[in-house]
Image (cartoon, rainbow, N blue to C red):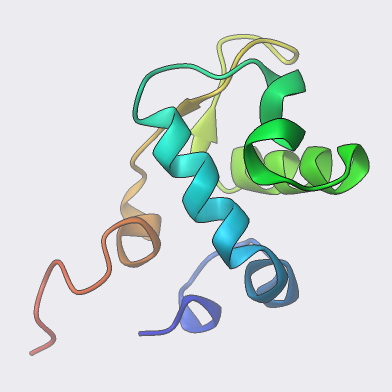
Length: 92
């Protein structure tokens, strides 16, 4: 299932435009938490675009934080399984 067809709350256009950046961000988060201010450096996006992407991923539950301005970490919500682990489960 392509990313734009998942039952995600992230806007499909954001996913289409930021697919590589999301992959870079997830790869960095596999090492642990990421300060919010580092999102632009990791993704290569301009500051505003990086903040928008981060906010969308936090809103969707893919990233999370203990505080509203704290570092973010990778989460594994059930609704995002296809985004985070494509083809993990074969379709019946």
